Image 1 (cartoon, rainbow, N blue to C red):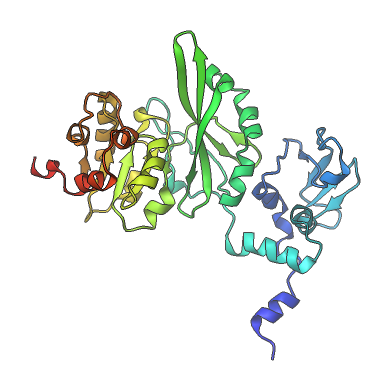
Image 2 (cartoon, helix red, strand yellow):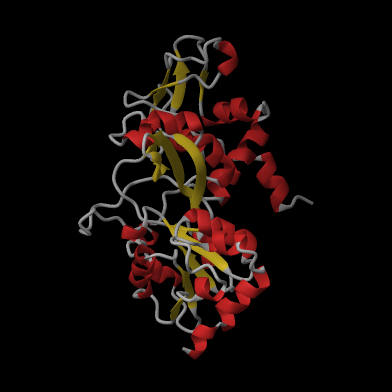
Length: 344
């Protein structure tokens, strides 16, 4: 007796995903120029990695379906042929299965705008930046150093254009897909080391950093766990918190303390639970915490934690300094949940 799985495998609808070729190119991080030129996916036929972009994307070929044609090596292919090249798979049924996992189950789509806030430096609203959320297993390829360097070569900020990359942090969306990356740059000057963090995202064609987006670090976990939320100042601290403060869900935000109130914090609001804010130990950190505080019904700003563990004298101290001070992780978590602030 045939079952549904057997029928599905034996008779896939070949036309079902043929119109998804452009999205599949984007899914695999393949750059497409404004004139629809791209590097030929048939890499083995090009000794120079097709640096002259000899292939062309056609939204409608003579047969009525999207297609890629390379004018150098002669390769022509649709979405299934492209899948075969990328995955080393010649069997159509297997190609179909791979593509179906992308579009039939995962629903390749843009980030829902209600989880992203955009605003100008003056605080006025602007149109949301358009970007494509990509699967985690493709994010490393799309946000590779080559792409970051190409994007920052056009930057007006010297430290971004010339500084060395010293760290990076990925931001996910409500579905667990990657929507952006924060990159930390450092530049040696006569007056010391200059540091900055820049946010980059993928628009489906290239890595970008124009415009402004305000997003929450570790959003997917925060929306899908029952642990208390603790908000840090910067993705670096939130990542450290994820490793150390495992009884909490550690989140943060991008674009610095001046933009602390810009993300859509209300999506994380839990009226019946306390949200904790661990600011850096300085005035701007506390000011940023107050900006965030306004978005929650039940919130505690952990201003006294640095004094409690004996490092109040360290300006700008954060979770990393608390751990370096020798404070036991259990003691830090106990203070957050039951600390002296509850009596103050």
